[in-house]
Length: 233
Ligand SMILES: Cc1cc2nc3c(=O)[nH]c(=O)nc-3n(C[C@H](O)[C@H](O)[C@H](O)COP(=O)(O)O)c2cc1C
Image (cartoon, rainbow, N blue to C red; front, top):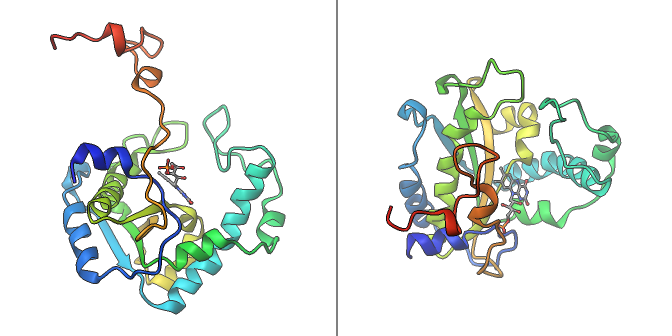
């Protein structure tokens, strides 16, 4: 499909019809995704295609308490796991241990671990240039060498008529997932991506317009776009 159409319609899908997705399709998706950029072209990603039902179930068991933590923070009116005004994480405003223990079954978690394709994306942390590592705030730059690859997976899947969702719940359970996935010491979890034939294809994504997030010269400069754009450029 047209790249522009794919970019406009690669939304999150969490419900899949029963149709399986062949390994040949998954291979093609990864074969396109590998052209993603990464710092120093290290390409430090690893993808684990999780097929084993017992491993999927283990992922589900570990993800469920994290989902409970997330949902409880939202229900209490907080942005889950967001840093404070000092750009540091100081722990949640609610009792996370209690939230974890609340034994709510989750159709979302069941849908995710039951999806036709379940990919765990990890990255060799020692290969990354963490350019913001000395800044007195939470760090984000390391992710820049792995999430373009993840988004390429989503776009390539879209091109195959598939949809899915990138999730990060599993990362919070990295220590527990290490022995389950035989994750090497120098690898860390980045995402769990599930794919399949969606029950419903997204046609319109709700996103802010360019004018709302783009300015000229300074963060508080004039809005870029509309009347201010140079039609001759
Ligand atoms: C870094 C990241 C983490 C996400 N984690 C989750 C997740 O754990 N569970 C989930 O259901 N969706 C997750 N999502 C999907 C977002 O909820 C989704 O991209 C967003 O709501 C926009 O949805 P739309 O593309 O359908 O409009 C994640 C997306 C990103 C980029």
